[in-house]
Image 1 (spheres, rainbow, N blue to C red):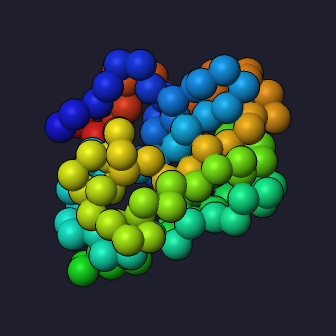
Image 2: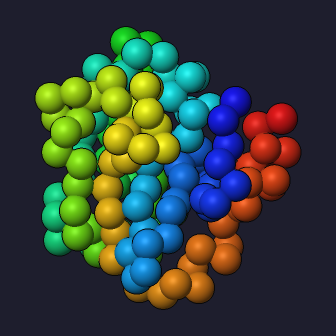
Length: 125
């Protein structure tokens, strides 16, 4: 299972890449493997206020629909429109082209509450 060292992770299998004052968010390789073939992604609305650990998006696969939770507090400033026409990017490139949304963080310190790669590997172990 691919778990990049430069990201932060949640118990609910979202990843966070800090990019200045923003955080790019998607689901982990583990999560997409569990879901199998992703057929639809319900993206959050740009401008939406995200509260940590609250549902913000939905990923649907041939197997199940799964809520995506905001790992940290902030404002949605961008969504990955490519997922509207190609939701399978979540499966083929979960840490790259399969990202889901970009959040302007309320506080950069919020990521300190998340797991590092070693902690996430242990959790899914």
